[in-house]
Image 1 (cartoon, each protein chain N blue to C red):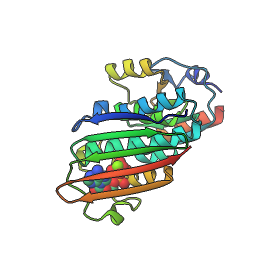
Image 2 (image 1 turned 90 degrees about the vertical axis):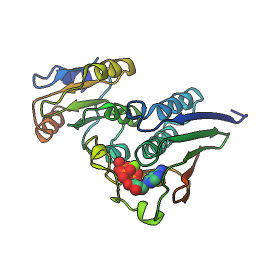
Image 3 (image 1 turned 30 degrees about the vertical axis):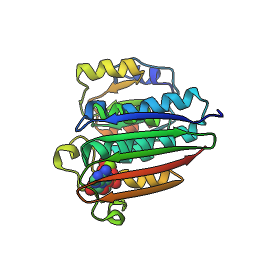
Image 4 (image 1 turned 120 degrees about the horizontal axis):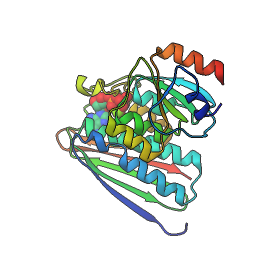
Length: 107
Length: 140
Ligand SMILES: Nc1ncnc2c1ncn2[C@@H]1O[C@H](COP(=O)(O)OP(=O)(O)OP(=O)(O)O)[C@@H](O)[C@H]1O
Ligand SMILES: [Mg+2]
């Protein structure tokens, strides 16, 4: 499943621009240095942490996309930044657990 | 890639909005140079953690990245408070990060262990009240 396919699932809403990157895995974590060390390249990273550092970690680890759970979103200037840097960001009202479950089921 | 290339960055105090810029820039340059993705990822992780530590725990500082034929050397020098007990600081989970930055997702106490894990050599020189210099070598 690609990031664009994920955005077609009802529960997930597009925040920045989608890509055709293939999602290989799901990764859940809110602590940035753990995500930095452990997030697999190509994974869908589910988190409630939505700040500029989330974007930096996503770029540096080459995750396929960021999923903001629990109704969290990005501020407008960060949405612009995500678009500029080509980071696919989605959001959902689901919990981290339910988001991960749904993505995993759809892989 | 015969000649040695040097990149320099100045990291300013408490500049979270720009945190990661040096690492992103280095990542782009290494990609252009055709360095292996595995080595690039290691450099990116090690440098980002070091960059953030300079912002959170010191007052910013200077980063020098030297790219030679067989290795990338990262030197992060700050004039911060220094580290009282390096061995303790290196332990996974040890953190003195204030609440303000914990709420941003920092403070897992995994930065230094990540830097160690992703580099082939790592050295910390530190003096209380004077500053800290972290040197990391990633072989390519
Ligand atoms: N440049 C530095 N100057 C002063 N103290 C430092 C510096 N770098 C690290 N430290 C000390 O070492 C501790 C451990 O650092 P480490 O990067 O492993 O964790 P952290 O920064 O607290 O949290 P995390 O990196 O997981 O977000 C810090 O909490 C701090 O006390
Ligand atoms: Mg740290």
